[in-house]
Image 1 (cartoon, one colour):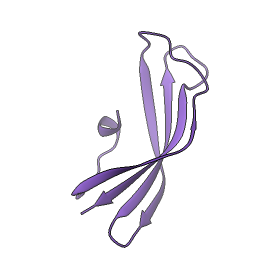
Image 2: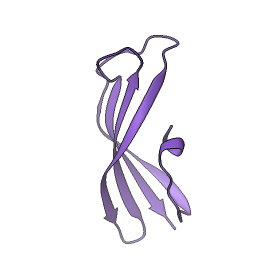
Image 3: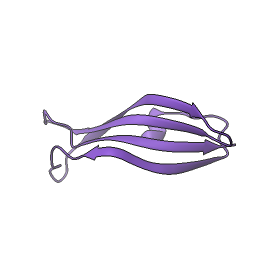
Image 4: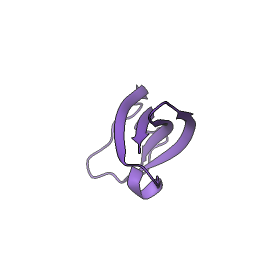
Length: 78
């Protein structure tokens, strides 16, 4: 889902640095349609990379609550 929502140019290597504050407020029923939103929370220049933190919300059709809420940390190296 991330690749269809966000485009990052000029990155030689991407590292999934991990997740912060992960919550699962609702279970997803079988065969549900899901969607995710990604909001850039922070951008940090490091010595050899750039660190981006995204707020991620995953929802499924027909629910008032999201099924997953998290902060996702990625590092991009050139």
